[in-house]
Amino acid sequence: MGVRAAYWEQVRASGFRLPHDRPLDDLTAELVHMLGDVDPKVRDGIAYPVLAAWISEGVYDDLLAGFGDGVSEGLFNGLGEDGTDSVLRRSFSALLLAESVLRDQVARAVHSDAIFRWGDRAASWFVRERDLRGYVEGRGWAHAVAHGADLIAALARSEHFGKLELTVLLDVIADRLLTPTTHRLLHGEDDRLAFAVMTVLHRNRLGIDVLEPWVERLAASLVPPVVDEGTTAPAWPTPVAGNTAGFLRGLHLQLALGVRGQQTPQDVTLFGKPPQVRADLLLVLLRVLRAGQPAIFSTPSR
Image (cartoon, rainbow, N blue to C red; front, side, top):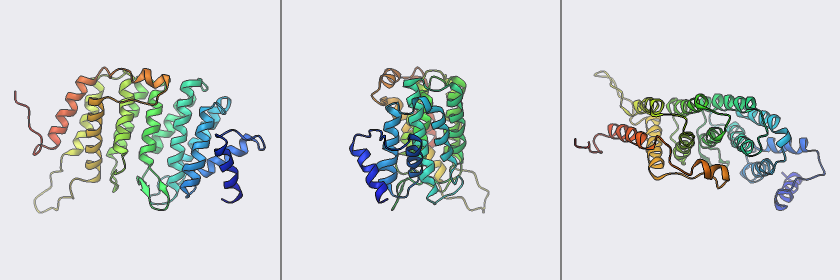
């Protein structure tokens, strides 16, 4: 990066203070471009933390709707590619859009239409993302699934979202898990997805009548397919089955132990009590987890 690196290193060393020697638009455009840099020191060490700090400090409050719209365009940069560097821009755009949603919870800076628009774009990207790599040698973290889960968790916190929108977020997570892939989630993505669901549950807008069929839909992927005699069975578990099983186990554990969010007043309140559906949903999860591994888990006696 040369001169540019030295400039941004000074900004970081200053505690992320906003420079006044260049227009904010120019600074922002440069940082957003850097979100897709192949060097993790640039992308993860400068661009994201600087922009996240400025969002949380209210630098963009009067511009937040336009800022979020611009960032969300990065979700579609090279979408459909797998194994290329384009995933970096998509993934870190998701993480930055999550920061924008969380800022609105504090500043009430945007109209609900903007949050709905960001949610639509997030959902469209997340279910279509094909590059599910976690850590990439020489590039650092790609982590599109984890960052997408963080974005969904941010949207689930938004008071602009009611029962309908929260139900859609659950369906987006299910679609993501059930979409055929060759990637196994090996870097904590299942826990991040489970936490996103926990955030939805803590809103206390969805009952077991919605949640049970949603779990059953996921559980169907845990059952090996029946193949005709003479037909070679696919390797089992498939990546989809393995990823979904890990997610359901993670969700069960988080629901059993409880979770905490960020130490903000909003999250302290949101996660202060267990979800109202906790007991009923635990029973559903126990049932499908037992059924998914009948050779391991005992069946409770009547």
